[in-house]
Image (cartoon, rainbow, N blue to C red; front, side, top):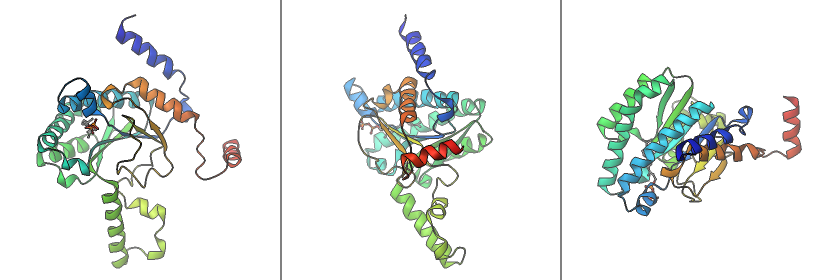
Length: 263
Ligand code: FPP
C-alpha cells in the first residue's frame, strides 16, 4: 500500500473507534514545535511555521468533518512579540496569506472565523484582512474557528477585572453580583463554551499563558509530536484518549454515574 492511502485507511480505522455521542464540543490547541521541526531538518524556522500552516489546514478540515463545534488555535502569543523582528514579520505575513487563501474554503465549509487577543497590536493589513474574513464568514454555523492572536491569558484576565471594576463604578452591576459566570462573561471568550480538550504538541508540560481561566476543568493531552508533523490521526488519537476519561468536575465517580443514568 502506498504511503498516503495507508495513512488515509489508518485514519479511517481510528475514526471508526470514535464515539460520536462523546465528542469534545470545544478543542483548543497549543501548536508548538515548529522551530524544532525545522532545526531537525536543517531548515529555517520560517519553513517550520510554513509547514505548521499545512497542519492547521488538516486539523481544521478534520474537526469540521468530525463535527467538532469549536476549535481554538494558539497562533501567536502576546509573548511572541519578543521574537526577532524577522520571525514576527514572517509569522504576520504567513497569517495574512493563510486568511486570504482560506477565506473561500471557510465559507464553503460554513466555518465561522473568530479571533481573541490584543488584536490592536496586529499590523494594520493583517487586522484588516482578519476582520474582513471574520465578517465574511459570520454566517458559518457548522463550526467556529477561533484564532488566538497576540493573546495572553493574564492580559485577558486583567482586562476583564478592569472592565468589571468600571461597570461596578458606573452602577451597571453590583459588586455582590460578580461570580465566576459573570467573570467569564467579561472575557474575550464569553461567546464560546470552555474547551473540553486541550492538546499541546512537542511535549512541553505547561500552559504558556493560554486560556488560564477557561481551562479549569479541561482535559489535557500532551503529545511529543511536533506541530508540523501533527496529523488527522494524531487528532483522532487525542479524541479517543479524551473519550476514555471520566470528567468529574469536582464530584465523585458515583455522582457522575447517577447523573448519566438520569439523562
Ligand atoms: C510554536 O512553535 C508556534 C508558533 C509560535 C506559531 C504557530 C503558528 C503557526 C502554526 C502558523 C500560523 C498559524 C495560523 C493559524 C495561520 P515554536 O516556534 O515556538 O517552535 P519551537 O518551540 O520548536 O521553537
